[in-house]
Amino acid sequence: MLCNRPPAQITTMNWKNRESGQRSRTFEPQSWGNKGQEKWRGRVNAIRAFIHRSVRDTALIVVAGVSVGVMFCLVALLILLFRGFRPFDTNHVSVIRTLATYLVAGALGGLVVGLTLPLTRWMPGAALVGYLAAFVVWYLMGWSINSEQSLVALAHTSAVLGAAFGLPMGIGLWYQNRRYKRTGKWY
Image (tube, rainbow, N blue to C red; front, side, top):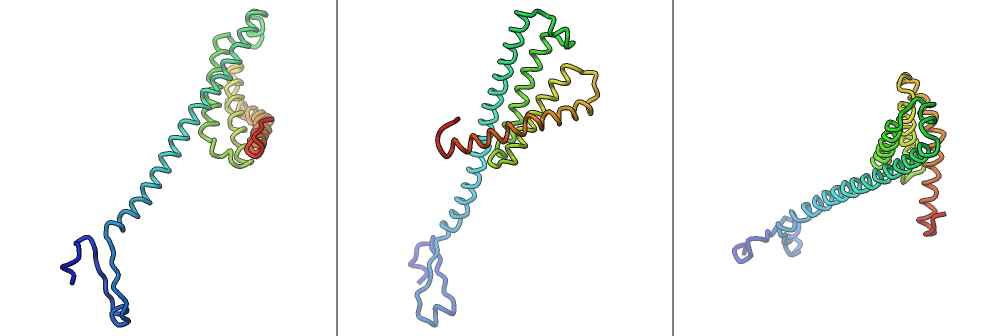
């Protein structure tokens, strides 16, 4: 009886279906492994897609942060053009240091937002992302202006300014994004 069947199928017969007259069950071993492999491949593909999407989004947000830094650099160059070196000398910074700080702060702020972007699905997460980005930017700005100040005092000042600016911005952008998803309009 088993010799006439193809080798890919296994027939099982137990005491229940032998006595009750039920027919025996036939299983194909290839389908057992495929289901597990397909499930595993699906999870691996989902993880790969998540990583790919995260890297792409992070790169785009870093580029956006650098773009904001470039805008601030243009403002600094306009100040230099119309006011000269006096505003920079008053704050004890050089023009090159100011331009570099704007670019680095934009890039690092974008990197922080890009890495923590999945948290923005929820309002507290969006507030945290805004706070962290603002903290990084204020920390770099404070360090650029007053590099002699202790890092702890600079961190305290950055924490207060990050909370004052980053929390409302994160919550506001979360609310706007939620409204945009519902209505299709960005107000």
